[in-house]
Image (cartoon, rainbow, N blue to C red; front, side, top):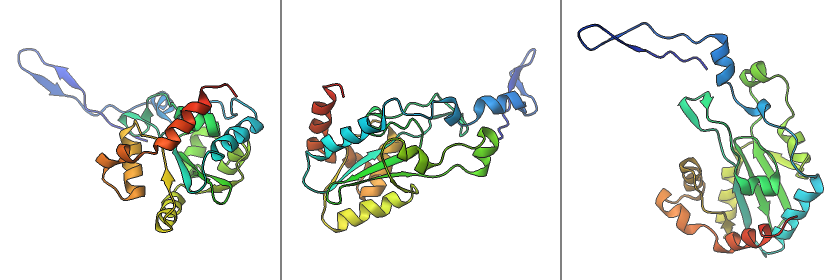
Length: 211
């Protein structure tokens, strides 16, 4: 979370001179910290709303898994100085959690939903204080199964090896495209083309109506 930046300073006559590293103050650190506590922890709608939305979507499919990667942070000039976070709108519609680095999987065959995300580290807690766990946040939107984000690769691999469809929406962020590329074992250039048209239309048709 520490960053030193060399600042060029104009010199009379010729070019520029480089001054010693700029050392940020505590105020700069505060402005650069992760943005989770600045956002509402509570979902926008009731638990039942998200449960019902997912049930409607699941009813459109006979088998396979539906994969929903959430958005991550977007750094500006170093890792902890990020643009204001914006969650993927489809993830918000079905899962309601406005927090970075989450993913969710709906298993059509098992009739289950799993939220994946990593708990806060001690560094996060020092800056932000004690916040709800992934399990507590997931439960607030009706998801009772939670796993670390690293388990996503295992879920997708097992589905692919079993010949089950893995459906996802076209990614619009490069980081999500690379994530899907690694999960699916395909080239990044092929990720968008293999997105599920069936899932695309199911989401469009559902979101055309308020719920």
